[in-house]
Length: 162
Length: 146
Image (cartoon, rainbow over all chains, first blue to last red; front, side):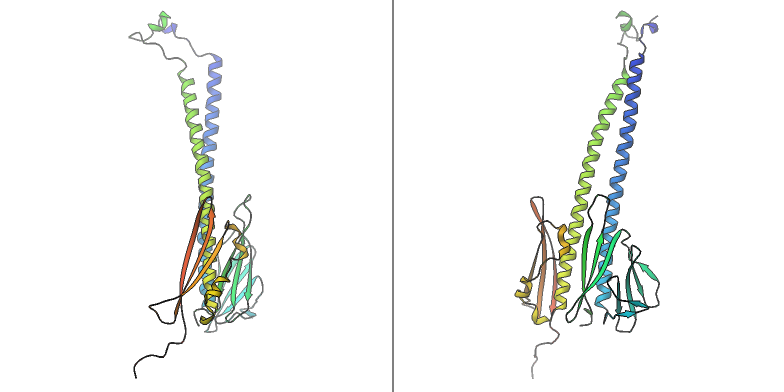
């Protein structure tokens, strides 16, 4: 008889609980998705910074170790999208911006992508002087809602040889 | 009411609508967690911006030292240092400023210390990075004893 005295849940209570549980699941999913998005964005930003730093170090080292930046070499013609460097031993290093990627190639070596997959553009400029300075101007677009950023990496031609 | 009181073995009050209460508490906890996630997201975005600005400042300082490297040693003067400016690409640095100093090294003959300091504002506080390069003349002073 005592058991019979316990009131059951009403339909309204059950519906409220079901709605609450559905809300909890929705919010939980949103929270986890948000956390994953934050983690992914942080990881991508960190990777991009590391790649840019590595590229800057590589570019400065190549330019500093080169004797000249000729108009052509390795079958490439120098221009805003292409930089040809000649080392003292006659070998070449070529940087080429092509198809959304900045590529670097050494004489006789394989072509390597110099990271920056999300870069929107790259241009090489030369500042006259003795010795000349070479500048790599990178334009990156980190995300859909983030404005494009421009970075300049300057190096002195033959800086290691002076 | 009597029936309720005699429901348990020792006359305890029966549990009612426990599921509703638990769901409400869970919802509250989840809302709190969402607020924390939003804060973490905000902090993460701010930290990313800070790292990007720092990297930009480092590149600007390194570019200044490369410019010094391209100069003849005799041209590395305080006047040259005062003429140095940030590049156009430094727009990411709020109130960014490049300060270059050229000083003679007292304990190293014919050597100059070039210091490139890039500072910018982040909120109310100022951040800065500093890179130093030592530049020596290619010709040595005549010295030694006859």
